[in-house]
Length: 280
Ligand code: FAD
Image (cartoon, rainbow, N blue to C red; front, side, top):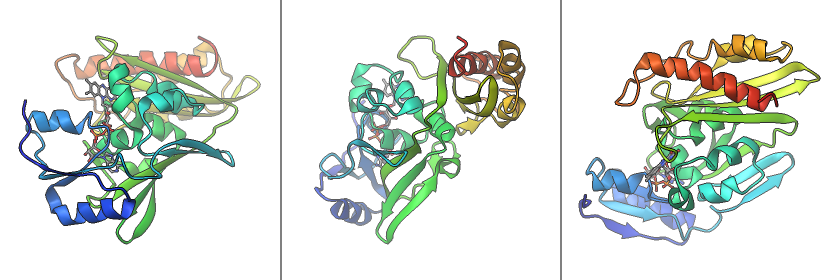
């Protein structure tokens, strides 16, 4: 439970953080809230030789709305996000683990870590958000759909820093989030986030995200295709939710078999869609 020895730097500008990361080479790691990285280091599953702490870097905090888009600084904590008006992301952030984890963990750290069982990655897919990353040669934008490439592998380069996340305000949409855990503060066995936009009782648009149903978070496109354009009723939602496990490859673990997770995905999808449509 004691990490291997490492050096520590707490630069006070983005430029110095990028320089420290480059100087530290392959074994340097960024440190945000530390609530994923430090446990891995204590278990000796990660042994960085240098930690570059982002806490003093200006401009990485805060939430602001600009022309129908929310800008969320990468170092925004789950607690700050859950207390905000950022629709689905606020709702989801409030369900992460316990108060202690929410007070330290950050949205940038969670997305860069890319654990498919985490709450925010699949919700970001539903929001169709983007991540802004800064490297030595400049800034680029990563679409949520391109972010999660394999198990805990993301499109963020080793010498890049996620600086902010942008999501559309999604005014007029309803949101739902359902996850199944053995204890309330556990990671989800399966999680489903949903967003529904209605025109009268017609489903004008719908997006569904799945957590822990494959090596990356996924969009449940078969569910979306089945519900889009339909009257929104409990029956049409149930029929669409029956497709929630289509194309998934859930990992069996100590808590649940793959078949049980497929069943959970359908049940949670129905409940999340009902919540998003105001039928729960
Ligand atoms: P860190 O641990 O500091 O970093 C994680 C990784 O991201 C590292 O590789 C780091 O180098 C990299 N990184 C961090 N910031 C950046 C950046 N700005 N740019 C590029 N790379 C960056 N999460 C859930 O979603 N659901 C849960 O139920 C849940 N339960 C938890 C229970 C416990 C007991 C603990 C300790 C954690 C739990 N978590 C859960 C994880 C928690 O949400 C973490 O805080 C989060 O996953 C990582 O955020 P962090 O700021 O702590 O990142």
